[in-house]
Image (cartoon, rainbow over all chains, first blue to last red):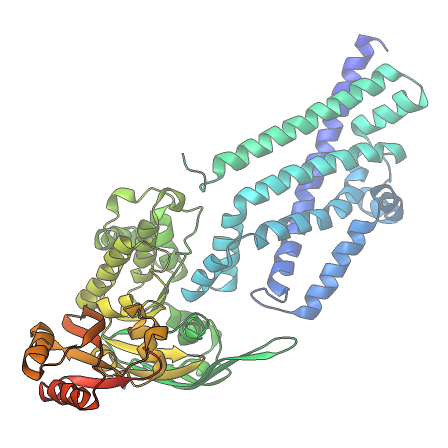
Length: 221
Length: 335
């Protein structure tokens, strides 16, 4: 493929991939965060143990996490149509991406929140902190570093899913790789999309780790 | 009315296979202004006991009454408000790692719903009290253990509490730092009139600042009273064990008849043993001796091995008693 055609194609691919990844990550966090907080609170060792609620949510998260992404994408096509109006393209792909990523993100956040020193939570309780105060003043701020690391890993995973979605009508670099590289045997396009995906992943990783390190107050300067 | 009243306090933990009775029928009164030590071996239930005082642990039965309020009768919100009057400090300080010194002290007041300007002003006062003004912008990871505990104390004082509960607050600190933290607590007690409850496994902590002590053994209150009472006349074996723990005497050496002499106040400075030897013409071996300063009072004990002759033994005991010393026979176990 000529450079003149390649450059705009790739730029469009990068734009679509970033669009799908960031919007999906955002929505996955909007859904995953409350889910994770509920999991942490209702767990048998949580602040407000509700074993039944916990078991149901825990099982649901596991169910959604065990469906392979491509299959989930097909399963939720009716829902995708309902929300996005169509089942193909970048915007439509956000629907299955969010559904697949939210439980994953919830688990990441849950494990970050569980890392918070129980002693600090007990100290907050001893001062008369309410449950919302413990969540927003203790759990989340104290888990901040770990949450940022988790967000880095999660967005990387979502980037990978978004590329995968190219196989059945998703947009972005994944779709370019499938359409040109796989269906039309244009190996140069295939290689370039792979390189671009690697570069994007690296950037996510470096930026995420940098922010988490910079904001961590536990490290001695 | 006592500031803290524990009535028939019982706490059992139900596990899957067994139930553990952590506390059984504890009755204890703590008065306004006391520095009350609660001491016991590890696993005796003292940490559970202190958590019952602010209801971090709900007692299985019995009641906790603070300042006339039965904690079991309080609504969750009332309980949270009461906790602002009953602060707590911990063995591992439990500071927020992502907030600096000021932020950690502010935390207690944010929870209490104080205004930002008032919080800032109060932080300055508290930093002065605990002597950390030069460290106010540091994070906990940049502070020593003693400094972190000072931050925790400032945080505990922030809401003007009536009571401070200390859960092994000096157990993670070296001896010098322990002394400085204990002095700070004593100063707080004297200047601000705050009642302090200290959970510890170290008798030296009780010795240095407590006015009263309760001994917890295997979930039961073995004895309680003023530090002087318990130190001079420990009634139970566990009390003796805790008080004379440092004696280092080896039980296997006990064959002959032995006695323990307890000195209090002025008798500690008299040359009792040399008088005994010159006046009774007997020889005794000193098996163990120590002298300590327990909240300002001199308190000593000595373990003597008596001569073999029965008559001489009685002579020694009679002589010591005539000097108004407490003499008790040690049988089988030095403790």
